[in-house]
Each structure stands twice: as C-alpha cells, then as structure tokens.
Image (cartoon, rainbow, N blue to C red):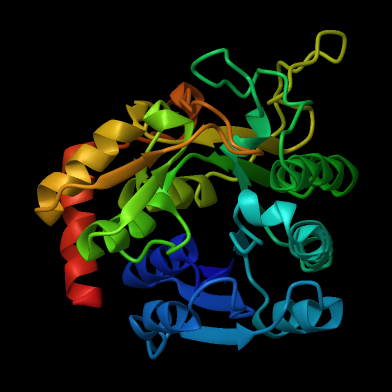
Length: 334
C-alpha cells in the first residue's frame, strides 16, 4: 500500500516507517525537523531508512495547509498514520502556542487532506494523558476524559473529537490510539529513560518526581509499532450495535474507533530505575521531589478492546526492554 506517515523523524514514526518499508509498503514521510530536542538524533533515525527506494520524505510543517495538501496530492496515500505532534507535558506550560499550531491546526489540515484525498483509513496518535487525574485503574476508553491537567492532554482530546466529526460528516474512517509510556532504542531524550541513563552514567543526580511512587504502563517500541500496523490494516467501521439513546465514549455509528495502546502492566518508576542501574552498572543518586504540575500519578492501560478487534499482543517484558534500550544507548552515545 501507499502509506503516508507524519513524524518520521520522531521516535515512533521512524520505527513505524522502517517496519512498513520492511513489509513492502511505499511510504511518504513528513516531518518539520524542529529543535524541541536534538535534530541530530532525528536525522540519525531517518538515516536508517531514508535512502530506501520505496521511501520519500517531505520536510514541511503540518500547520502549512498548502504544503500538506501538495504532499497528499503528489503521493495519493491509501492510508495515513498521523504521529507528528508537539510532545511533552511540562513544555506545554512554557510554550502553549506550539501545541495549538502542531496538535490542533496541524491535525485539522491532515483531516482535510484525508477527506479530499479519499484516504481509506486514518490512524492517529492520541495519548494516555487525556485521562487526567483519573484514579480508576486500569484506564478504559469508556472512562470520562473531561478533566485534562495539561494543555498537551487537552489538544489530544480535541483531536479525538475532531476525528469523530470528520468520520460522522464525511465517512472518513479514523482510529485514535491513546499511547501509554513508550520506551526503547532511539527514544526521545526529553523522556525519563534517556534523561536517567545520561545522568546515571555521568554520576549526576536524577530528579525523581512524586518521590518515585509514579507507576507507568511502560510499553516497548516494537510492541507499539506492531499495534499501529494492525490498526492500519483494520479500517474503522460503524458499530452496528451503537445505541444513540445509550451512547458510549469509544464507539459510534460513524466509522470511528478509539483504543488504548499500552502493555497493560504498570511498573513503578523506582523499579524502572532499578533496572536501568542494573544494566548500566551504576547506582543512581536520587533527588526525590513532589508531584509536578501537569503530571498524573499512575497510568495503566486496559487494552482488551485492541486485543479483541485487531489481535494486539504486547510481548516485551520490562526487563528485556530496558536491557535492549541500554544496549542501544551505549552503542549510540558511546
């Protein structure tokens, strides 16, 4: 198939593009290569597949509607995986406008291009952050998500609602995936695995928020990519059992679906740090701090619907995933 992937210089987007090329798809990648974190890492990810004969790349900003439409018109994708976004919860406190431009304006432009380009299926990245300060575990797509605690979360919830509108009005099949904490080789340097690894190896103190009592549904990158591809291959369909007199939040009479994508097994942050220490061969100096604004205490994904509908089966235990991450980190950063 011809699949357009946004965010192909990013962590998940690069891994997805590489997997799609390996199975024989033609891929057009879009990324704006911004400097939110080290552009050299983004380029290094692209270098893994950028010269592949079935890969094309466009360096454009999704907020530029004309550039987005031109990319769609030239490639005419059958399916789209929209993973590009301004990421990071804490950064949204400092630069809110970046989130509106990328996550809201950019997403509307993708929706419009999909609508006019007769795209068969749009799969897009939402986030576990939409659950806000929900304490009912595990998080279910049936839970209310009306109380976000960061602007990043609010923009991701807005994306889910806008996608439903396009599915309802234009019968554009869309599937939203609420990603839980993704980690592994080639990860983002602003996330805790990379930050911790760097500082532990340097003998520097690591800041551990909520005194280390956070738990996160850490999900290995290969499991995430497998789930995204399964979703791409199963276009959303209207739910024949949807009852408008008794609506539910994750099903619709429109061709629209919403899933959690995580490992389904939360791990306490202190346990994650312990595994890093084990594989790095260094003990961490910990600065235990209170909860930060915009953070949530725990995340835990109910992924049963994704298992049932597309056969999603995350299989990488945290011990294996951290070992692979550390091996890559040592190789890449020396």
